[in-house]
Image 1 (tube, rainbow, N blue to C red):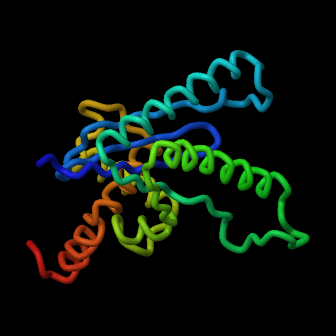
Image 2 (tube, rainbow, N blue to C red):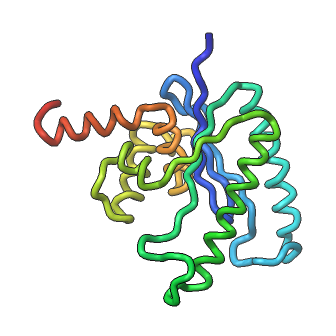
Length: 195
């Protein structure tokens, strides 16, 4: 019997980073570009070609994950704390970006659903607390996820590591249930329970 495959996804409007774990080991990790940076209209500087490549890549990944019986976990979209739709102080571009992010996540979920793969959504604050520990500010979270992905996941040896791939690794760890264990070990070590 083969090990269960758990895939973590960190996606935004620019692309999709994914990391697959089986038996606690990284078995695949990549970034699929969705948009050309700084370009908002299809067809500008090859964006139409990039979107076609992204769509084909997403379809191929979804099909492969379906064949392998993968469990997929994806970081959900969120608005920054203190920002609520309808408030006079809301910056229109932040709301517009949030809506575009939700649309990108919806595309991924639909591609997975079309091949029978269930996708669980997890809030960033949840996986960060469970996998990295609580009380970290943004820069500390980014550094901690990169460190964990490099040191424990081995990213950087075989696969290039970046913030998105590191977060995808951590989301996969959360989905595999390993996050709670790491959190417990970290807390126990801080309290002198582990050497």
